[in-house]
Image (cartoon, rainbow, N blue to C red; front, side, top):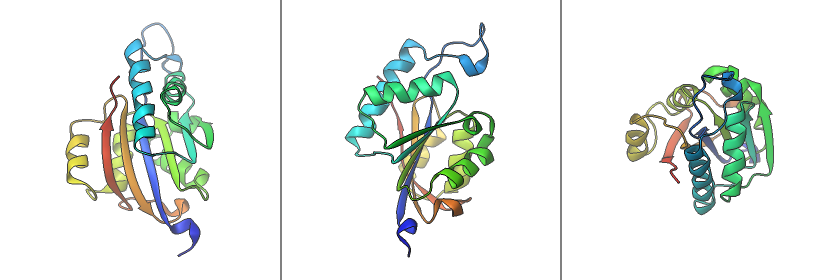
Length: 174
């Protein structure tokens, strides 16, 4: 097994609670006060769990960028952060392709994105594999500030349906 094929961690995070979008384009919606608190709590949880992404792939939407910014203020860290419009526009297949292309030699990748894409991609990748408790929590809905932590053994370029196991599902509230 090559060094790139050793166990990896993929974390899909749905952005935190955003303001209602009645007065501005969806892409420009900002976090609500609760969203800022929850994103900070998500960062604290990532730090406490020892989940330090080598790469964060973040949607270009304002609310996802702010989610990662507040997670960092809560203690989350990352080696590299990339902003990809494909996480905003690409749906599950587009995000999957972005992870395949950008993952490289990284051991832990965190995607800050949107629903229903986060739920669809988690279901696609895990196909029921992993922790029963995590799947039960996820079945309640991939709510704002939800984090799906998956394990994967392979090269990111080969990431595909049914290749991950859902390890944890956590909803951060601050």
